[in-house]
Length: 301
Image: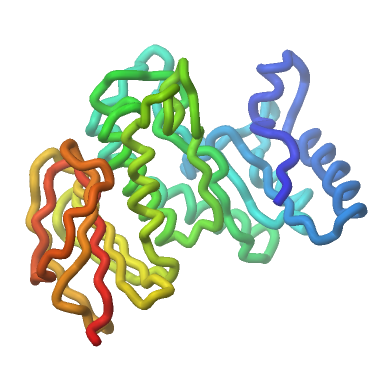
C-alpha cells in the first residue's frame, strides 16, 4: 500500500502557496503513474483529506469552491485502490477547545449516518465502482488536550474509540489508523513516554475480536453491541456503554448454538482490558458505566 502526499487540503495555508484540488489531482496522478510503471502490483491510497465530516456544505473545498474528494476521484478514480480520509471531530474551533463527555457520546454515530455512507456514495457515483474505504488518521481531537473528562488521554476517549471501531467494522471499512502510537509531550499517542493511556486497552480488547462481522441490534440507550465470529468458531460480542450509569442489556443470540459460559474481558475505571474469567451466559448482561465488555462464547459441543 502506498500513499502519495498527506492532507493536501492544508497545503495552501501551510506552505503559503497557491494549491488547489485540480493541481493536487494532476500532481498525484503523475506520481502514481510513475510508481505503477515500476511496480504495477502496488495499491494506491488517497487522497488523505485532513477532515471529512460527510455533511454537504462542510466537506473540504478549495479556494475556487471545488470539492476535494470529488475532484480527486474524477481525475484518479481509475488508479485508486483505497479511498482515504482523516477525521478529528473536535475541537470545533480554537475559540471553544473544551471537549465534553456528551460531545464524544453523541459523536460516534456520524460514522454510520454521514461519513462512510457519503464517501461510498460519492465514490460510486463518480467512478462507477465500489472502492474500499480507509480512515488513515483518526482521533477525537486535532489539537493537543490533556487531563480532562474527554481528552485524548482519558478513559472516555477509549470508550468513544471502541464505539467508533465497532461502527467502522459494521460499515466494512478496509483500514483504520489511530493517530498516533507514541507521544511523550502531547496527548495524541496511545503511549506517552512510559505511560500507557486508556485507549491502548481498547486495542487489547479488539485484538480478541472476530473477523466475520455479525448483524447486531441494541435498543438500550447509549449501549451498543458489535459481534463477529472468530476463526476458531467462537462468537465475540463487544458491548459498549457510553453512559456513566450501569445498564442491564438483554442478550438474544440466534443462528449460533452457544456454550453455557462466556469468557469475559473488560475495560472500565477499575479494569484495563482485564479478564474476568468464565461466567454463565445468561439472557441479560450487566455492564458498568463508561465501559467496554467483551464476551467470547465458544460453540456448544
